[in-house]
Image (cartoon, rainbow, N blue to C red; front, side, top):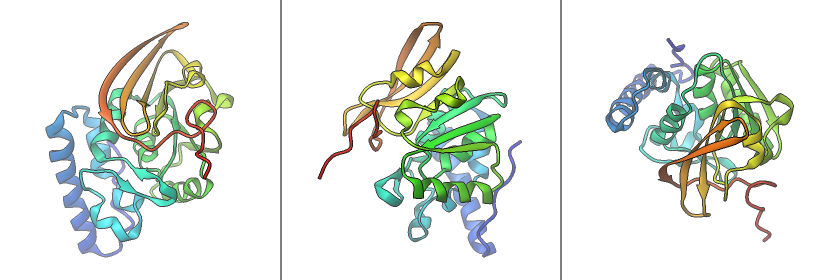
Length: 231
């Protein structure tokens, strides 16, 4: 069972409010819409999502939508976090690479489900803030890296699972190369405005690719992603 992280809000009334919202989120946004993995549901009911959004919008933390965070990035809709995690089929022995730490919320979900998480973020202040949040709720099975996530993190490869939380124009080949045989990668792939969540399974030197559902993510900036726009 996951650790209960109903932590960091000192006001007991606010704690109780967020606990109710978490239970409602799991029941109505996740389980009712087809998320079946009990471990994923338990973890997302225990994690204080409100701690991963800016203070001014914490009241919306459990809304059924993505929310803005600093530096023009977003925290994904709860259903998308749960769906991508379930599609990874994570186990407690897995070594997972997350491309795009962002707020750290997806990282925290993975830390509760996997043996070790390696997470890479190109925006240093986001990474520092996420690391502080994760430490505060007891997530210590994580290694942080700063850099271009589109090319992965070769020094710790191979990985059992890879999750990409920003949209690439195509599945980054460097990430596929860093999967173990039988490993799974989940990534949003497509244009700048809409993408398709895509599941890639590596079998030796070949891959099988399955489109899952339509989505919209911020762009994956990097050598094997989108180029930064010059203004």
